[in-house]
Length: 263
Image 1 (cartoon, helix red, strand yellow):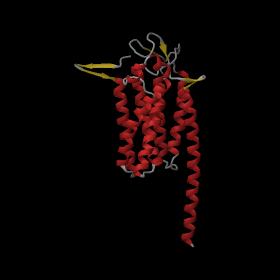
Image 2 (cartoon, rainbow, N blue to C red):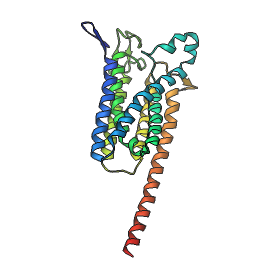
Image 3 (cartoon, rainbow, N blue to C red):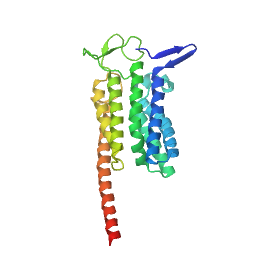
């Protein structure tokens, strides 16, 4: 699989192109949905830059955390900014910085989380296509007819049949994006779309991790990402339950207000 494109003196990497396309598509999707919902697009712009900067920082920090043994052996890894990014770190970093930003702007963080997370899933789908071309995040060896063989990858083992985990991840991420956007059209209670992202993505990521064969850090027999997936799944379930209860309380209060108006 070829990741590098040479256009005269210009060298382009498909991984970088797909990552940039992911950010751009996420912003466009969120802006369109924000306009339809009448939400403040200035707040959305701020969240976007928080996601870019905070996500990049979180992605790199989590990579450093899971790579401590390698860093001890080779400290030059610390200033290698071309490689070494962890998706979960990016999600966590982007969400935390966006939360701080919304608090400072006195904006409803959960409502904006409902808005942007379907677009984040779409962006992740684009990013995984980049991973496919680069050869990172590769799968285990397989004899299954549906496989990929790399010949020029700097990351995946070359010349062997591998499970195309990047493509499976991409398809799953795109599916999550469209499912959540369809669900959002039904006007669910505040927080349920965000909860749905946490539940669906964590389950999908846990399963994909079983098929992957690149080093991602481990705690016992589970990868670092599987451990995080368990916590994200529990968080998503708790968010969904809480959103439902909050919705019931709002309905009761609205009904009580209506009765008072009648009397």
